[in-house]
Length: 186
Ligand SMILES: Cc1cc2nc3c(=O)[nH]c(=O)nc-3n(C[C@H](O)[C@H](O)[C@H](O)COP(=O)(O)O)c2cc1C
Image (cartoon, rainbow, N blue to C red; front, side, top):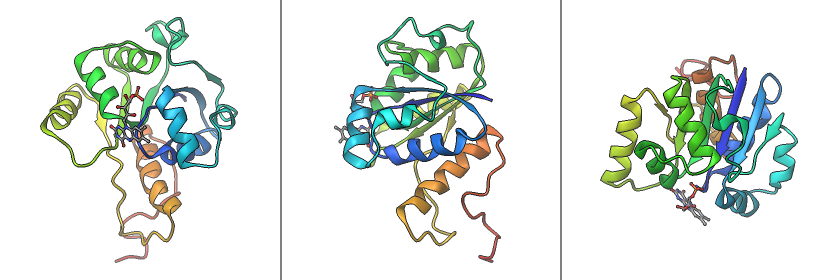
């Protein structure tokens, strides 16, 4: 599968890193990060964005509007925006395509390709909720960074992997990186 991963400036850079690690074993990854995302990766993790790029087949600067994925003629199977800031969410729901991440999301919508967004903000205001509802009605999978606790997570990575497993489920990729309900907990 050809998967586009867009990383935006919300807390939760680890979600993107773990997803890229898992997908790199079986998918072709195109990677883009906003400038704030790069800052947050440095603040929240011990990984540099350059290290993350090593897991990808290709990456583009977020301001490179000549990037191939800015065109509907360049095919990809799915796009995941993880974590997704409320700013990027608002832009996509309004049809604004002013950088590679928002343009590729717009392409995914117009070409009826799978788009998964992993919003991270709390609490949510009515504008955030309306933006998510609008995108959900457009067919976007809104998969909030809300880990479950029924698997008995012991580390932050266990909680991150709960969300990464759900993203991979939505991509149709077999995985057992996080316990499922009924596996030893019933
Ligand atoms: C350290 C830090 C953490 C942030 N966390 C969040 C967050 O969790 N959710 C969110 O919507 N915005 C968050 N923001 C604000 C966004 O980064 C800001 O709205 C930015 O314009 C998003 O742009 P982007 O979507 O192009 O990355 C955070 C900013 C910083 C500097």
